[in-house]
Every structure is written in C-alpha cells, then in structure tokens.
Image (cartoon, rainbow, N blue to C red; front, side):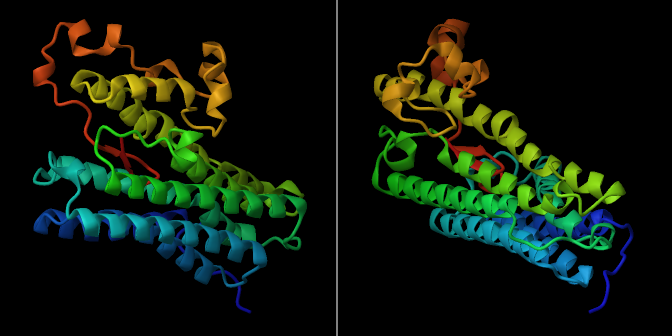
Length: 338
C-alpha cells in the first residue's frame, strides 16, 4: 500500500485549515447573499467529515486506530448536523442571526468562529492521520485504553443524542412556562454539553494511545499529545464562551423578570447539577462550596435577583428584551437554546 502523501506540512495542519476556510466561505457566500439560514449548521457538521475523509485518504496506510478515530468523529458530526438540519427545516429560520444576517462583517465573524471550531476540534484525527505520525509502526488496536475510549464515546454519544431528542420533543409539546426537567434533564441542566465533552475526550484518548504506550516518539509524540487542544477548546467554549454563560444567567434573568414560572425554575436550578449528571435529591442538599467546585457551577452562571435583575440595577424591565431563546453554542453547531 502506498505511503502517506505529504501536503504543505507533515501534520496536515495547513491543508485542513485551507479546506475549512474555503468550505465555510463557500456556504457563507450563499447564506449572506440569499439570507438563507438552513445551511449554516450543515456546513459546520459536514466540514468535520470532509477533513476526516481527506486526511485518511492522504495517509495511505490505514491502521485500525486511524479508522476508528476518523469514523467516530464523522459519526458524531453527521448526527449533529443531521439533527440541526432537521430542526432548522422545522423552524424555517435561525433567530440568532436576526441581528447580523444583513451585516457583512458581524455575520462573517460567526463563520470565522465556525472555521476555528471545526479545525481545532478535528486536530486529533488530523494529526493521527498525518505523515509524521504514520512513519512509526503503531501497536495493535484494542488495548485497555482503546476499549475505555470506545465505551466513553458510546456513552457520550448516547447522552448527547437522547438529550437533544428529549429537549426537542419537550419544546414541541410544551409552552415557554414549562420546565424541561424530565429524562436526562432531571440529572443535569445541560446533559447534551456533558455528552459532547465526553465524546471529544474519548476520541482524543484513542488517538494518543500509541504515543502513551511508547510506539510514537519525537515531534510526532508531542504533536499527538498537543491535540488535547481540541477537547479542551470545546470544553472552554461550552463553559465560558458560547454555552453555559449565554444560557444560565440570561435565561434565569428572563424568567425572573417576566414572572415566567420563576419559583419552580429557581427550585430546578437549586436541585439540578449544571453539567455533571447527579441525583437531584442529593444535589440540592450539597453545600454551595461543593456545587461551585466539584460540580463546576461557578458564580458567573448564577442569577441573583438582588444583584442582576434590572430592578436591582435601576433599569426598566420593560425595555429589557431578556436573553434570546436561541443562544450560541459549540455543541449544537455553535447554537444553544436556553
């Protein structure tokens, strides 16, 4: 079988970046010109598939680890883009673009961020398939680390898929005052985020297994371990940029100021873990310090009416639009709904 094809650099970083930029700019031109929302998340999800297929094809020699890692990221991306494509077909348009759809640079900014999201999270598969890693003889697939990665991937994908379906069904059959506290959402306020994080770390775990067992060395060893940037970037994105920070406090503020079943929602916040699934009967009894540390419910997520409401700030709630129902997120193609 032919060896790997060297393109621009030994880790396929440049070629995957160029493909991602070109692919996203192509769909951006359609979305901006036609004011068309239906292809945005489709473009993000399918971009992962293209990068995995291209780097796998260029690698020449296909070992089991490459195939599994590439397949896993493709399955995750196709499930995500398929779900989001189905959802946008049902809703007709994407409300998060109402303020930027006709503004070139703000709208382009979203697409640039989507380029970064795709390229960085694809790094474990990209580097694993690259010539500098393929030059080493890799050990057989199926070690304990590999099996653990497969099990974690399956758990994460099921959690993410089931929670997306549960939330979609809930919103289709309930009004805005209702609280989605059934199924996985009774154990975590954001089980889809939790599942997505597990998926990405499990892919990384399998990708670096050869390096961890000493079958890869030198710069290739360092490059493989450096791809942890992918799952860390996703986690940071969900927790501090476009996920929890845009849904937790803004969503609570909107409910409080509109009087939208606030007391029940406040109790739900108090008894339900923000991210890590945990029995609510136990969680609500935990000290605040434990919730803030072990369970990652940082103060930036917490809404305190005495500090954060418009009344406390001396503003007029009538002029406050509240948090948008649709929030940006990495896991739903950079979109989350509050």
